[in-house]
Image 1 (cartoon, rainbow, N blue to C red):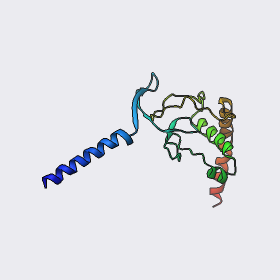
Image 2 (tube, rainbow, N blue to C red):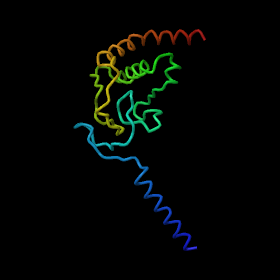
Image 3 (cartoon, rainbow, N blue to C red):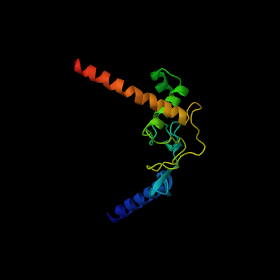
Image 4 (cartoon, rainbow, N blue to C red):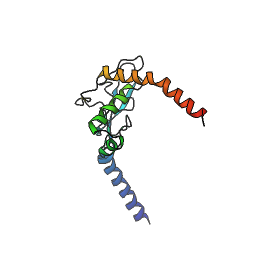
Length: 157
């Protein structure tokens, strides 16, 4: 009985060592900026084409930072090219929470979630701070009309 317990303990120790060395996400601690505490930086992930942060697993499904995904299938469902889908998703992502704030496509260097910005990432050629602000202005201008339409729809039901 003791031999089996010792054997089991050795197997668990070997498995834990293999996991620790090869499968655990590599992390370091880094200061996001002077006004925020250090965050644990997660390394070894792929760069998201939308937000530019290294926050996608190898399978490239959904970005763990922005929640976006770019695929041929999604582009076909939306009725646009993958290039246009990338542009639209970037405009949507960068226009969030930017009311009265300056749009920064390349910052912060590390998100609060711990994903580092890929220094080699570049936004879609048609996406810049001016385009993001225009996209946001259009969304804000359309909001009252959308709310009114929604209210009218619920009244008629």
